[in-house]
Amino acid sequence: MSDGGEWFRADDPDAERLATRVRERLDARIASGVLSLDEIERVASARVRVLPVGGHLSEAFRRCCIAWEVDRPER
Image (cartoon, rainbow, N blue to C red; front, side, top):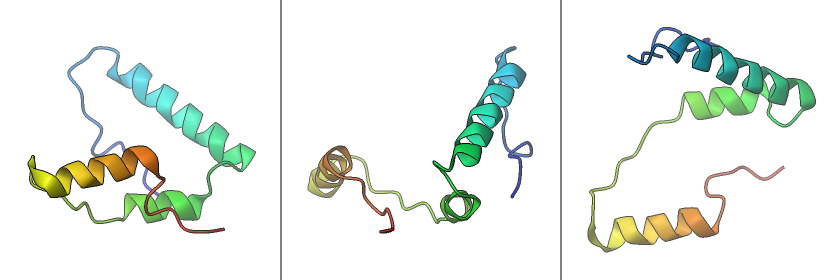
């Protein structure tokens, strides 16, 4: 798994500290069993599908995302 360093960029002077904090929180969740490396790899390699802004389809999808956990595999 990549550490994300090759794509994490920000102009904020606190970006390095933020990246470190994100990595620490991710490592803690992996260690506690909340997340698995397989799940992280699945999400990291997923194709992004973009819906056109506006319209009925994007509104329906937005409502589904609020109401349900979509695209989460059953355990």
